[in-house]
Length: 250
Image 1 (tube, rainbow, N blue to C red):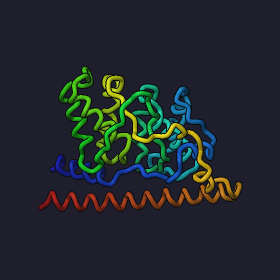
Image 2: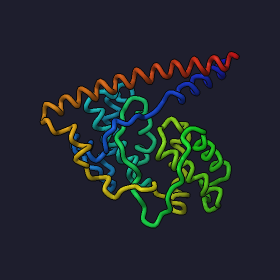
Image 3: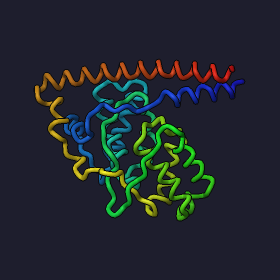
């Protein structure tokens, strides 16, 4: 019975979890909060992760401090090449998916790489691909066509879908596969821009058109949005739990 209830809780939590977007580009958020997206310097990522941990941001991400340091970690995690992101960031980043809002950025393009396939974010294909990669030993040898296909599926679901499209095991397990597979099978998100680190004026206007007063208002708005988002996620968890429990009882 305990095992069955644990399974129900896990399924309900996964159904309700997602890192939502705040609707702003990461380049503009970097300007707003005063940090640089620099893949060559891992120390700010580690420092920000430590602040997220010590400030309890996994439980409440509504403060300006939590918002800034989550955006710094998230923008690097989502943009930088996998092999330059510290392992602590790769693993610890996902502790904040439920409470923090993400900015918008795609993985940096790799010269000469093919376009990544379009993922299906709803069918569990990412978790299936991760299981197939493990079963086929692709972490040791990723040269086969089946490893390539499954790695592309896992990579695109990880990079392009909401975080609830993958289990925690797949979210973290992809980083174990990258060492063996990424060099052999790189791909780029179709249409990704080379100017992602440049803040577009249209996106940035909400932050600075009205000076410091508008900046304060933006912070208040974000606090309200985070709190509302958190309440909605808790409500979603309750609904998901009820639905899974009902199906289990039936």
